[in-house]
Image (cartoon, rainbow, N blue to C red; front, side, top):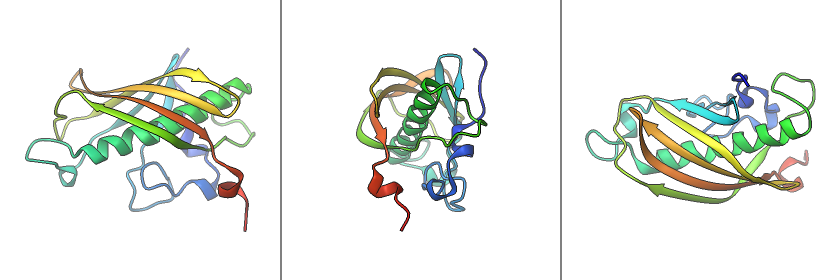
Length: 159
């Protein structure tokens, strides 16, 4: 199956403000996630200000990258299960993180492109478990497991 458009480009405007992946947040990172066959992928190059110590990425940025990659992956999986693909007219489900487990395997170099590859490990009615790995220069630097759930009504109800 070929790669798809980025799911974050189709979030409703009310849900496009996330610091990590919100297209409407001018100060954000603008992470974007798409299908690549049966895996999901997010690509991002950390900037000099994302430093932990000289030459290496701050772990909080990596957790943020995984968080947004995983909620985007969950949205893609739920949307696909309903027979949709990014660009369809149907509203895209918006997911939030219920659990975030990050394992820092090795220091992540700063200034090189990072590739996050995710797999859908489990999917329920409103919950998706996403396992991912972050690669830098072809080497795994971070592994994760995220439980993402559809945003609760209290977050989606218009005031």
